[in-house]
Amino acid sequence: MSFLVRWSVGFALLALALAVPAAAQTPVAPLPAPPTPAGQPAPISGQVRRAGSLKPVSQATVLVEGTSLIATTDGDGRFLIPAVPPGEHHLVIAAPALMPLRVDVTIGATAPPPLDVLLDTEVHYTEVVSVSPTARDQFASYQPTTEHAGQELSKELESTLGATLQKQPGVSERSFGPGPSRPVIRGLDGDRVLILEDGQRVGDLSSQSGDHGVTVNPASATRIEVVRGPATLLYGANAIGGLVNVINDTIPSAPVQGVHGAFVADFGTAARDAGSAADVRWGNGRWALHASGSGRRNSDVETPEGPVANTQSRSGFGNIGAAWTGTRSFIGASYGYDDTKYGVPFIEEGQVELTPRRHIVSAKAGASGLSGVVEGFRADFASRRYRHEEIVGGEVGTRFGNDTDEVNLMVRHRPAGRLTGTVGG
Image (tube, rainbow, N blue to C red; front, side, top):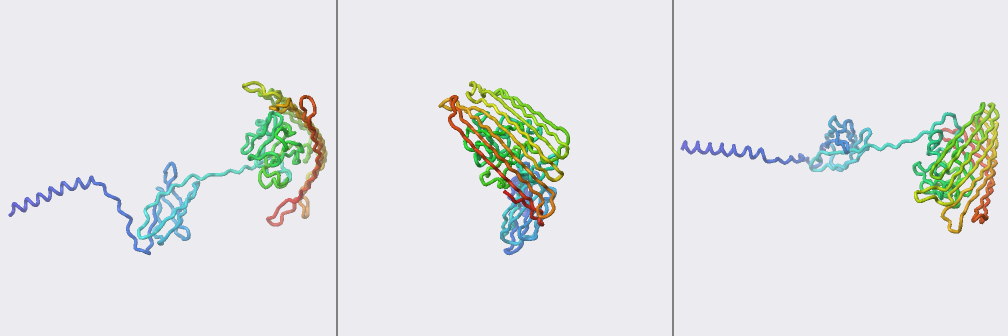
């Protein structure tokens, strides 16, 4: 009997020894989430990590919408909300410099499994604040989306206004060569894009046809503003695409002391073009005189396959203005003349040249810091006489004329609480 007992015990020990290693090599399935009695709160846990690098995010907040339940992640990005009522819940996970995320969680008969939350990096949209070295009245600011002046304008300066602005986001160029060129804003052209010079309409025919150019030399500008958004409504509904304001300050609006001047020249090799502009200002603190002029000339555009015939152009611009200036007001007038001639390529009927010319007489007055209901005003008048011939084979084929008179008055009222605004037309 004792022999049988010892044999049974030894066999049992041998079976146990063989079973232990086998059990150690067999993978153990994770334990399911503990059952939760129906209608009882359950915990919500998980980890918050960065998308991409998968690094844990500490100090992230996890909020159960519609409740006061909130948790903050630890150094390993883990969180625990101990008792969440049963039902469907929306979790909002947020952390500094990361995009917030919303996760749906359901509390049922069992606690939900741990959450693995990945947050993306937050996208920041920058706003540009334009600062000028001298103070500018609110009427002189057109709420530009982009502004080009100083060295930035000098680096981007090209032979035409469209070519000067074509590197800007949302702005391209419509061109039939160096002469007939015009800016295109957000794919809109023609009457949908308004061209201004010192806040007044240019008055040419560049918006009416693709072979008509803008009679403005960008080399004469002190700054160029591109305006998009609600500010364009001041100039009519047709400027829905935006507007370009070329500012050369022909009529001085601020006191000038002494003599100031500037000269700029630029050259190009693709069309052997050259341009220059000069600007002179004189003032004694009350009276100010301004004179400026510019010119440009280019030959046919050169390409790897040879020159493009009839793409030559030349232009000349001259302006003179005078004004009386005070500390808070000014009044002045100016006269300008433009003379341009350029060719239009790819015309089968023969060589076509366009000769736009323009006379401009303008006057401006303004004041700021007034007492009473009216805080400031600006008034301007402009009379333009535009002539344009299309010469085909040395003879005038078509003549255009565009005479425009423009009067603008804008009044800025004094703030009434938070309400500020400008009235005019």
